[in-house]
Image (cartoon, rainbow, N blue to C red; front, side, top):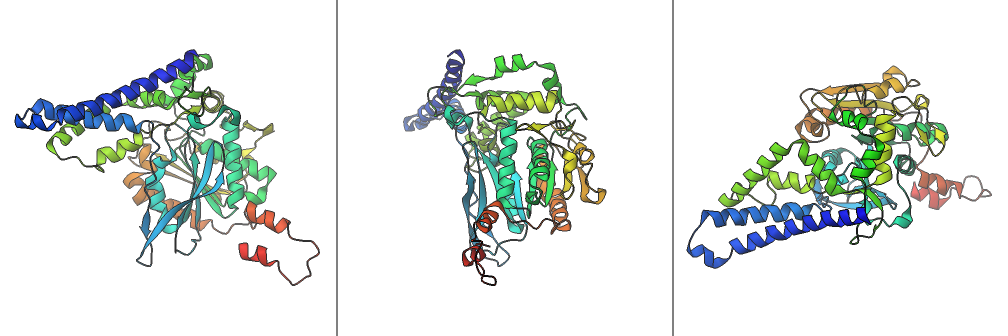
Length: 444
């Protein structure tokens, strides 16, 4: 109960600050005060508005906000978000552009489970939608998952990816962003051994810690310096009374946010101070740059304790992926078994989270893959966020990734997606030759 009480205490502090912001804004905006203009009251109202919005966003999952897009026919088409696979800890969703012909390129974006929601990749999705059918892993907030659903560690995460790839079939092109890069590589190798025909067509790994020790950063140094006992004692708490996951052991999102903010405390402090004065001058708006960024940045989610701890212990401390010693469900994965999935790595020159050298290490692990099916790119001047969002991604990296996908399209894999293979397997064996199963034919 000690940890549950701590979780509830953090939520109480957050809720109190949200209330203080709302109260300050309401009181300072009282019409009677306008009779005697006072700069301090204007500042108080602006502070309250910014504070209330900030603390409110910390427990709210952002909306995708992708409602329509203009296609090549010059018309605006509605975009609907359709679940393809629904699971306790995460879903596979599809951005369905209504009224548009199905695109040949099919892309699965593997979103990180590192404190933020998959909506962090909203701009990445928007940039890819005009040229591809886009799917993404939408991970759930651990605080909302009942304890009865069981554990979720990096092996479970990997098996989720395996199932998602099977569902979408071998013509899918996988792009893993940041944290899931090593587990996506492992999932592909796992498929190469147990179900080769279900492997994706291409695999692009963006800024992921395949070999964290290749180029040490503050993140890797922290992973090596702290003990697992210290991590469990300091970072892990039990979900409080307010949520469905009551009692589940998690690394709380609010605690993660504290770490995120402390890494660049001076810059964040200045950003909020500037926003308060913009609100005072009437220069701020609902969707200005500050609000767009911090509405997403402040929205954090809890991670299951076993996922966080196993990531630190097995990926960073033991280096199981880097040493090709990763085990999934009792099966030792051999990355060298990947022989017909083209692999590309993308790194940012100024990435201080997953520094250059950590991700490109994946190519050396793919010993069974011909050199012509390997590629790498180092983006000059780009930081961690810039290699999957912003101008570096839009103008430089995205075209290279699409060219890589096109150059390796139509590989030797001719299998169908899992759902279609299942339907084909269910076809009656005694059907007369020359008379196709209309149900199966129509589904294809």
